[in-house]
Image 1 (cartoon, rainbow, N blue to C red):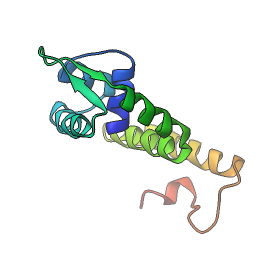
Image 2: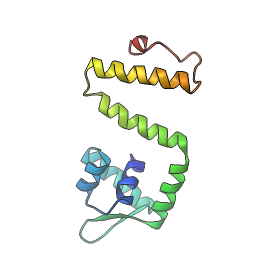
Image 3: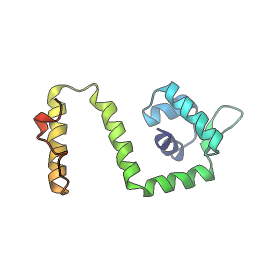
Length: 120
């Protein structure tokens, strides 16, 4: 979630609530993560409680963006949050998509299961 906050701040300054909305995170979780980012010097806060990404934060974000595994994990985390409110038809579409990508990308091995078996 720190990655998502850095992305939100890269796109513009804002208060914690604004950043939470942009990052699609809970405000309490966002605020806690922002406190960690402040301690690390990756973001800064002005006298009006408006947050901004620092040069150190921009460098860290660039490093993270080069890490494809980190990007994939962030995407999967976002996706898992969205799945909670979906019906079975939507979930089955998603599982079919995952199966298709797995086959096309040559992924496989013992963790591959048919879409209908993967939720049991």
